[in-house]
Length: 346
Length: 268
Image (cartoon, rainbow over all chains, first blue to last red; front, side, top):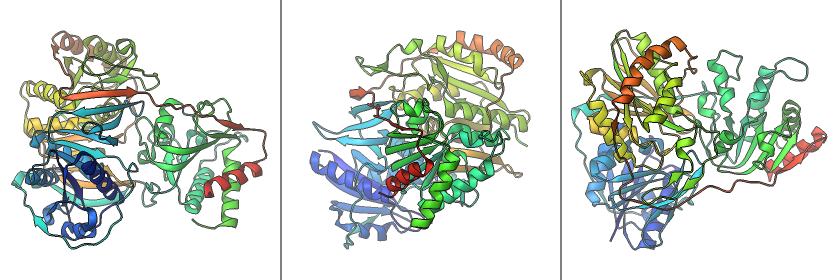
């Protein structure tokens, strides 16, 4: 029988992010379907307290690893902590959220545990054992697979499962320790900084993704560029709607090529082949003409609409639900006016 | 200033503009006409290579090795363009570059090739690669190579590496919600999975290309043949997503009408 460990980490403030609660739902459902024992391990600042916040999850037992060495993300110590929990429970299957912290550290922990790992998993089926679904070739192929090696570590993407409803229940929590050698502390965390110089434009939980394309940099109908005006329009829309900002590759790369740029745009905003593939309910694309590489960035956007001046662009070919053939500057100006008059800021 | 030994792991992937079709195989799936598909250097690995070149330029005496696993013939074609971008010594390994191979096996091959580099000095080693590949897209191979080489410091999704005056290395790693995690490591060896970095693609330099090719061709000739598969993995299905949407094209319509429709949709 499989022994299933749900491996979570807390945030720096001791909270559990939504993605962790989604992973909890997936682990619990999987354990129930395959008849496995289900255990919970949490690493990080305030791990013990956070365990009680999800004490209603039905895990057979709980263990944590906390303390200064595990309070901030660091490959070597996170790897060691995860390995200690995997060994503590003698887990054969490990489910964890695909956060940046675990994506960095769990491959190393899996290697040390003699297991195998699958990341960015978008589905788990349980017919005749565990089968996972994940994408290959940057969202161009979806595979279903299983593995014989154990422990099998599975990192679940966000937005796949419902977040677990927390109910505080007092539970018995074991404190586990991990072996920390001096060379594991060669790296020191210096904290966080915003990629876009103060303005937070990437919002994974926003219902809307707003994507700006390179068309904003080009000469408009008056024969001039209006980059600063475009920046103001975009900023205003983001403020009013609360949308997350995405960008095409060509727009973010303009900065490194020395062109006049939209200052809030960085490589972090880029969606597509070498960018991210965010998950939002709705996506509005403006001044974008990307075809297949751009679609990759929109793979997990449910409802899509686009505004640009070319009815024959890649987006018109079955990739978006509605294509408005219009000047994005005009549309965004009026859209901001209308939104502001009717609802104010989101 | 320090002199580094920078080892970049990077291989070929199908050109992103190509339509890919999966084929089922006896052990693992493959791509239809895989050997005929035009290829590029894996985009994130390419960024790692450009960052390596920039670092080597600023730190005299540094050397760059490009460790590449792929079919020999395809690697040769790829090197014709890559060799014109930056200077490096190629360590070629003749084997599959498929996304359906297992990173555990690939890491063993890469680590073994890196260990075979003459006079490799671990105290100067910067192990670079992409934060994930455009084929398997797993983001785990570099950690596995680091583990096999005994490197205990790894950074994922790096956009910037700063060599401080005292020789410490500061990394900016992409984390959630558009933020960077800033960390400092006391010294090499370190392993780095690069994101897009901060540098533009270097222009082609035919002269550099010719110089590189003098080393590339012998490296390809002595490339060791290896077998990498996906031991223990059973693929039950590989399919292309159905993506065709019934697009409604709205044109010759007043902006006010478009805006009204957009507002209603966005607020619904």
